[in-house]
Length: 121
Length: 107
Image (cartoon, rainbow over all chains, first blue to last red):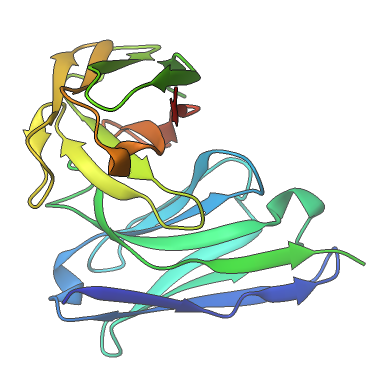
């Protein structure tokens, strides 16, 4: 079964940093764009960032641009999200998700279970 | 950025009812729209992609339609397992954006 497993969430102080990881299995990782989507407590879904299969293209939501960095290690089938200068409004469950087809036009068909990020002093 | 507006924000319905959720994009997104179902504490699940294509494994009571700026998700006969929150997402251009969600509740 195709699977994504996130890790790295936790409690961090405002201004701090955290790196999320997402381990992929049972699909050809390099063939698909990967994204991070977050959900604040009691709120809707918010797209955060996407990286192409090769890693050559990255896109970010304006709310995280300059603070978050998406990357991937295709040799390890792993996606990352480096989060710096964290703010209270970054507190959310973070999901990694696989593109459903070529590019991102077909939505996201496989999601991880989510990892929770709490930003608090 | 493309804004996605879903309506209604919530709907109360009974098992067996037909339920329709609409999603409007602030500009033309062709047919690059996806629909997701999310249950409490769980990750979203892709139901429909490119506006009307049913994702593998999704029951046929779910259907999608529309193009351009106006889209619809229809559940033809609501089942107990369909009580959840539904989101649309435009996949036409970055930044990707989601609708605010529609919660389908038991009447």
